[in-house]
Image (cartoon, rainbow, N blue to C red; front, side):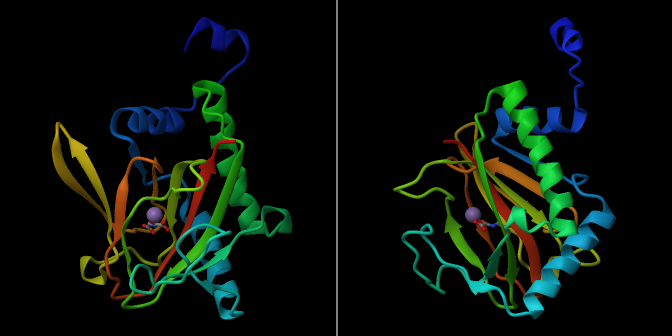
Length: 213
Ligand code: OGA
Ligand code: MN
C-alpha cells in the first residue's frame, strides 16, 4: 500500500482491487464471493416474496422514457428496487454496493453518482437476445452489475448462461458464465455485448447499473 494511502488511513480491499484489475485489463470481472450464502438466501427470499405479490412487470427495452415490450428480444419480468424503502435484505445489498461505489470513486476516480437496480425473473423458455446496456439517448451507464440468486447451484441443462461477446487479441471470444448463486458479474456497459441464453428453469437475479452524471 502506498505511503499516501497509509497516511490518510486508507485500507486497501483485496476483493475490490481484483475487480478493478479485471475491469481495467478485460473489461469484466466475475466474483463468486461478493455475497455470502446467507445474504444470497435473504435476497432470494425477498425476490420470491415480491414476485408472489405480483409486483413484477414485463421487462422493456429502451429506457424509462422510451420503453417498448418486445418479447422476441427479452422475456424476463422485473421489479425496480427502491433503496429508500429500507427493506432489510435490500439494505444489506445496498450497503455492499455503496461501499464498492465509494471505493471505485476514491481509488479510480470513476465518478459514479447514480445507481439503479432491479430484480429479474426469467420464466422457463425466456431469454435476452444479444445486446448492449446503453441507449442512444442515455450513455450514463458505466458498469453493469448482475448478481445471481438461484437456489442450489445451477446445472448446465438449466440453460440461462450469460454470454459475453469479447474481443481478445483481435479474435472474437464468447465467454460463457453460469448463473450460480452468489456469483456477481460486473462489466463495462458501453463496451460489452452480451446475451442470456434461453432458460429451462426459472432464473433469479438482481441486475443494475452504476452511472455517471
Ligand atoms: C440485462 C442483462 C444479464 C444476466 O438485464 O441487461 O443482460 O445475466 N442481464 O441476467
Ligand atoms: Mn444486459
